[in-house]
Image (tube, rainbow, N blue to C red; front, side, top):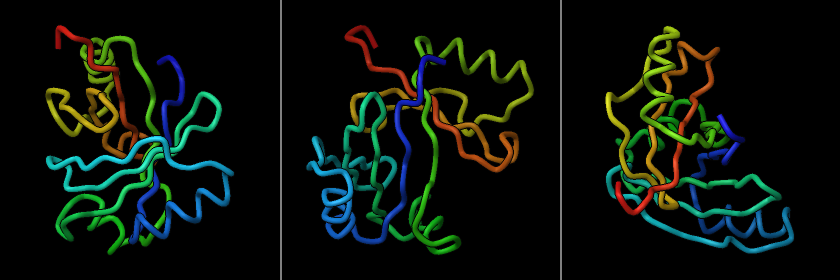
Length: 136
């Protein structure tokens, strides 16, 4: 793993959360994006080498919608940048981690992503992410 790429924070109202984080960080979101497959709207803030991703559910039955209903707003996941997501998924499986999918899929911010089940990572939902290259 190369670095902490971002920390995902589940929010009820992305507009209000954007305003709060703009005040907190002293800067505006550099990117806003909807991810249909995940049923979320996102905003990204750059903080040094790490990003903060705000996530609002666009469907109450989405993973973020269910998370907020069960736990409320807060940290949802920690994402790590990897050089080769396929190799990293294979390595983690061989180490006994449970992945939430067999193949990575397109996420926000031009990334291929895959999640590690929190039951195998001390209760933390871990996201692997790799920049999408032109050949992928």
